[in-house]
Structure formats: C-alpha cells, structure tokens
Image 1 (cartoon, rainbow, N blue to C red):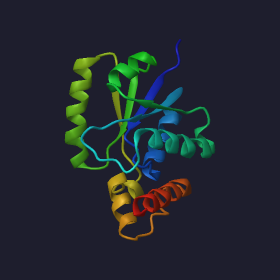
Image 2: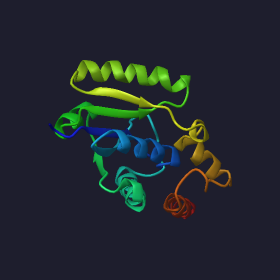
Image 3: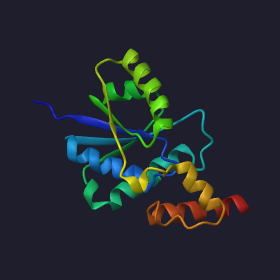
Image 4: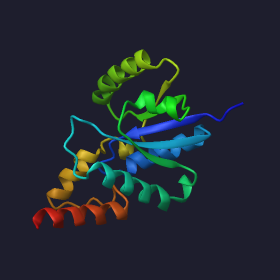
Length: 167
C-alpha cells in the first residue's frame, strides 16, 4: 500500500505557532506531510515568495517533531500540485465560523478540479484559535510582543524586514 501523502498549504506570511500546531498534528495522522507555501493573489505579503519558502523551511527544520516534513513553494493550483506529488489529502486549519465559509468555497472548487483529493480540517487548540499571520503582523508593527505567537527565527526575520523598510 502506498503511503498517504498530505499537503498543509498556506501563504505563511509569516508561519505562526498555529500553523506549526496544524502541521505537527497532521504528521500524527498521515505518513508524509508536505508544507506548501503558496502565492495568494489577493494578499499583500510582508515577505516575498522566496523569503516565505526559506523562512518556513528554517522554522520546520528547527522543530524536532517535524523531521521528514518537506517544505515546497508552489506557484500554480494546489490541486495540480497535489496530483504532481501524489497527495490524496489537503489539510487545513479551521479557527472560526469566518474561516468555514471561505474553506467551504475552496473545498467545492478543489473537488471540481480534482475529485481524487480530499480536504481534511483540523480545529486548532484554543490558544491558537484567534491567531493569524495578519494579526501577528499588526501586533508586530504596532510594537507588541509576538514571542508567544511565532518562533524566534520569524521574529528575527520580521525585525530585519522592518529595518529594510525603514531604510
């Protein structure tokens, strides 16, 4: 029997402890997990695509629970990437009802595009239920402490990016 490959996709701008929670829990369920760093045309990212891929790789590489997890950047449709890597599952986190509507639309579209791929949703632990990359960036840019929400390498990268913007 083939290993069950799952993809945990996201923009990861930046990757948060909430993302890591979902990735770690996916690793307990599936044989192989690929973290897919994607481009989202509707978002204005803090980090460019290559920076997000590299930062996500660094974070995943530092997590002992995530040995064997691959990080890949994808520029096309997620369902096409799933077919390319022979993944049968896409894992997403659902934090609140507001996430559900968007995820439902995406699940229906993904099913239309590739009915071989199943969507699996994991609920975050309560301490991550409010956490998003957007909120982390907002707190950061307003001088708040984000150390409980993201790994240290992310804080370093965000500080470096802020310095670059200030010139």
